[in-house]
Image 1 (cartoon, helix red, strand yellow):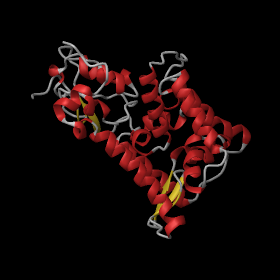
Image 2: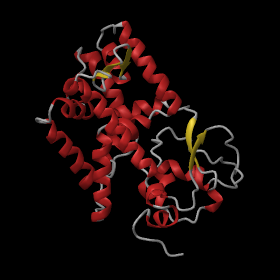
Image 3: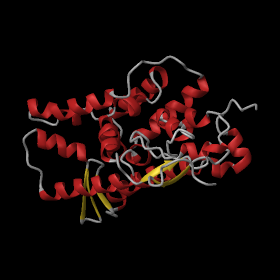
Length: 290
């Protein structure tokens, strides 16, 4: 069988353009909506969400706090306020249910930058790559939590690209533009998904939080797979696909259980055979009926 050199071409022909980009478009809409909700307050006086991704209030009542911020605060020797504790617990519960790294693909502003770099890298056929293992992000996470113990400050927050870029979107770019450019160039020239897939401590923490989440990507129609490999091309964490997709006949179920999966839905979009879908992690033994 002859496959297109452009990933997604066959899916567009068979399913239509909208179906071939459905989850990607929903992600971009969600990311844009989050930014707009934060901007409505300072620019229009409509305070649906007040604050930033690190710490905010929803409708002026519901606190939301970034877990990594809370961990750093505790490590630095400070006791967080009750609202911050409640906000952190709410965030943890949400991402524990929907999959921790949903944050990375659906809410994080850096995702748009790294996805753009990955897209251009593919178009330019850049193959050079820094060889960093994906486990490095867990070492970075460990250092981020340990630093406050020795410094008494949340040192990482002064260089956290996610927080810097989000604040820049709300309050103005300034020097933060250089951070965005640096991340883009790193992912473009040195390593595909280098920041999100190999270095980001927030992504590492959210993968731990969502380790046992019920919402998963499933390869329920994996018998229909024609080995085009396009899902591996577009997936930000391609190593998570093989066990679910190629485990048929080996007693391995069709559910992607690896917590590194971002639930981005790109494998669902790009598959012309509709092998993948969103579902629950249960019923994970053997192949599922069509």
